[in-house]
Amino acid sequence: MDYILSVATLAGINMIAVLGLSVFTGFTGLFSLGHAAFIAVGAYTSAVLTYYYYVPFALALVAGSAMAGAVSLVIGIPTLRAKLRSDYFAIAILGFGEALRVLLENLTITNGARGLPGIDSFTTPFTVLFCLAVSVVLVSNFLRSRWGAACIAIREDPIAAEMAGVRLFRTRLLSLMVSAVFCGLSGGLMAHYLSFIQPVMFTLTQSTQLLAAVIAGGMGSISGPLIASFAFIALPEALRVAQMWRLVAYGLLLVLIMVYRPQGLMGYREITSLFGKRRDDGRRER
Image (cartoon, rainbow, N blue to C red; front, side, top):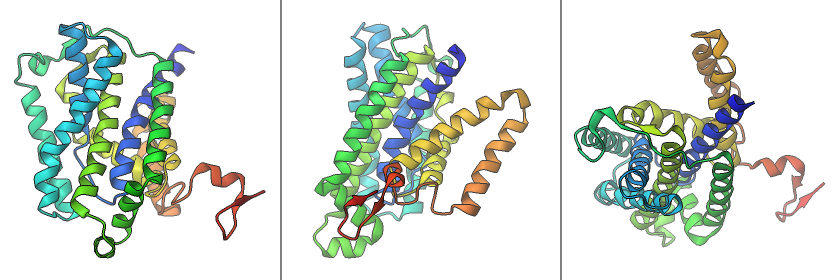
């Protein structure tokens, strides 16, 4: 039972990061291959504060999230102002993530490539569940706001959105910062759950796993990427007895989703839509 709870906790931490990337990729339409960098920033910021300076855990999580949001401006302002296309932006943020990882490997305060051991285990399953619930509410409210509507308009047609008065640079930068904040929160929770972090944990592999969950879950859904993220964490663990074949099952699951559900598990719908059909006026009926 402890093992199942541990897997569920790690899945919940990953779901918060996927939720953040979903805002930027799923609802704004820009691909990213470097969001693991924001998870690293949140993890190291919160861990350093509690490890060296004995800052309260809640305050360290807030600081890690805020630092991740601030760091996103470093890469977001020059790249988004240059109006890089989605594929070029993905390459640019990938380079940023790799550069940040190398920097973490050479800083004294991060203990270099050896990482930080012995971090206090403040993260509990209840903490993760609470943070995930709050994150879902915040993201839902953001997407219902005029800023969220602007993000969706940019995803559908950036030229038409700009002609309608949407400021592309400001909206995309806000979307990137919001997604980075949630990734930073995920990193802080992970650092204080595993009690150990090192730069090698935040590589391209982690970024692609986040992106795969967003695409497999549905590019216009909140609940879809969350379901896919949980499945991608739980399935390899459930098949651990099969050793190397569990990774084959992971890849097979991705292939099946792309073949039979190219729009993702939920597409542009939410899980609540399964409990009733939508009328033309937008109301639900049983």
